[in-house]
Image (tube, rainbow over all chains, first blue to last red; front, side, top):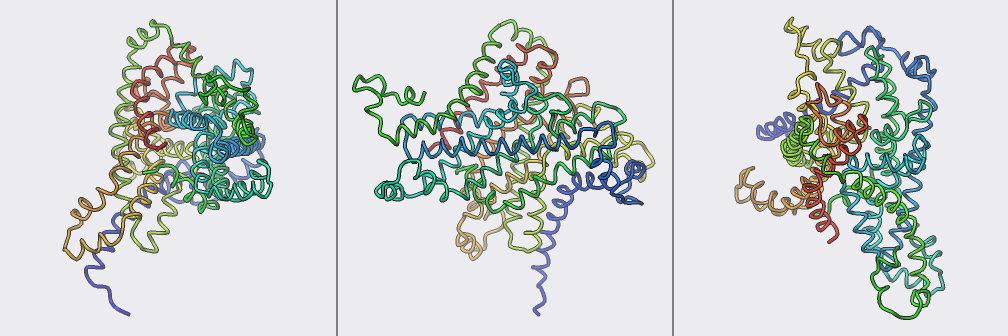
Length: 283
Length: 290
């Protein structure tokens, strides 16, 4: 084996000098959360970097809803799941139909709609939150899951349509022509040619919308307020209402809440990186 | 709606149904759901919001509200200082992560975590780390120096800096990833040629990397600025706008007015930001719809 030269060692050392701070910076808040989740109450508040008696008891308390703040944990978890999946499915349906219509059928005015959608994409979501809150009130949807689902669909669709349109513009026109020659109707074209070919982008967009809805805090806390209606992030925020919050339980719940999106992200990383980052900024 | 948008309805001719082909009818049908969503949840709320913000009195009230002025300054600091620091670090790290090493590949998998996990639990985790009495930071300061650490989040400057830090922590991986794709697209031959010519690290960056990445970098910076205007979580969950409402940004201020039932002020504060946001949005749209 060839010994590394002094210069190679120097380069490696420089890289480590960047890599180690990056590692610490990234992991500290997450490790701190994990540490709280496995610490009994007295260890959590003692400032130790590893608990003397690591325990899974906190998870036990959360799963059995054995605390005032956690009495609706499972229903809130379910709310989060239902809202994220519904928003994902609806976004996917609306955006796929719109992208097919704009890109493949070249519907008159499609370009206009695309530009309007892009415009919405760039408006910061927090700016739309206040009027959205009033609008949902006017529609009588406040404290109803539909309000959050529809708000998430509104926010997720523009980007979804844009990415799907970019992807479907790349499919050759001859494909549509050949299918039409063979007597395919527009709907058959959509179902049998378009959707199968678009699968990777559809997976990416579905995942994007699900994660967006699962992670949303601002709209969720504005639009939903009953303890049995709210989603997990709102429940986490509600912990702060009391001065003597059980932080070890808050961190445990937060840890459980953070696991599914992290798992989904890593499972679909292949699609996410290809489908989303390439589309996010076109230089 | 799509028909009126097409702009050709003004020309008189045969009835609409006769002029549209079957695929076009399907096109309108398939586009209709999004247009309905757009009308019901974008056009109507925006119109309603602007209508609520129509009174000049609201703007006078805003002008006299010191919290509004403070929030505007905070937002500017957040955008001009925070985003530029973030993007500079992202540019630097994109070079680091482009290195071909197994351990760097593994580190990049971990590095994405802040972006992959929801922000609420991690922000609350940071918040508790800096709790003056029970947080791990002050406990460690006490252990090593025997003195009480500062009351971090009670100082508006420190609290705002920490909110910016949390924002950077959360979105740095995303922008690093984007800039890395830009960097990997640069031809390797250029660097090899520069190597042969004995170019320094800085010269390689200055004459090869930066010229090919500057458009992407500036686009990313502008985009990040627009989006950061809507970053509600970093400030609200870390400081709640406190102490004494001194760390609000525009995104949290609107919600604060809403909670105080001053809806017209909430909308007016957002309308005040539009002259700065809309040109940026227009610029970005031009760039992306090319």
